[in-house]
Image (tube, rainbow, N blue to C red):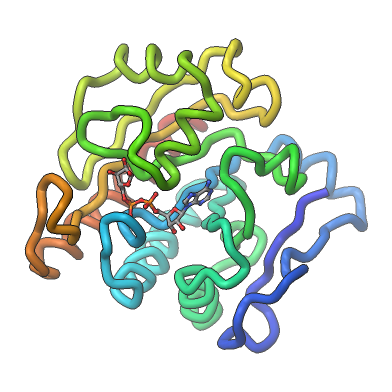
Amino acid sequence: HDNISSFSGNASKELKEGENLAVCSSGSHASLNNTPTLAFPSISTSDFQFNLEKASDIIVEVVEEYVNKLGSARLVLVDVSHKSKILSLVKTKAAQKNIELNKFFTFVGDITKLYSEGGLRCNVIANAANWRLKPGGGGVNAAIFNAAGPALEVATKEQAQSLHPGKAVVVPLPSTSPLFSREGVTHVIHVLGPNMNQHRPNFLNNDYIKGCQILREAYTSLFEGFASIIR
Ligand code: AR6
């Protein structure tokens, strides 16, 4: 059963344990399993230290632009903790917009275990990558490369050697990958966001004019990549 976190209720309150609401009634469940779904982490807001208020504005803005272009497909913002500040901000801001709750929602869980541990089927997941498209480095990048096994590294190299900030690359996942067989993930989309961490490459030195432009471009490239898969 999908554990969907809805935008209803007091959106400004902190995310609490058990807030992923179960959708288990009605006959819609079977069809939800086949609904194209992109799960994505908040790009740049942890290791890359991008401002959370600005990032949440951009996520909601670009989601609003794309959600209706994607037909019945769903977009899901994921983070690991119930205390996630970015999920709270995005929930609050999305609730103020005309966005269908079944097409965009937030979800608490490990993006590499959404089906096996959360019951949420996502055929595509996004990665907050580094410019070399290399495994490791911590965060969601390390988690995804670890969970996918060597098949992802090989498949990634076939698509691209590196990435510019703001760009995304779609990687079809071989069926030998545990992410494919266990979680039902058929594609990983690597996204490189803007970097505000002085110890990482392409440091923007607090230039949020450029930073916001690049983050907007990153989400646009991500959703265009997802659209190209489901078309
Ligand atoms: N599942 C879901 N969300 C996660 C997971 C997970 N397993 N792990 C982390 N997050 P970050 P960035 C959330 O730091 O800021 C890497 O080293 C996390 O809480 O992974 O874009 C790369 O190699 C946060 O909300 O990505 C790059 O060098 C979001 O994922 C650099 O970090 C993004 O956090 C990219 O930094």
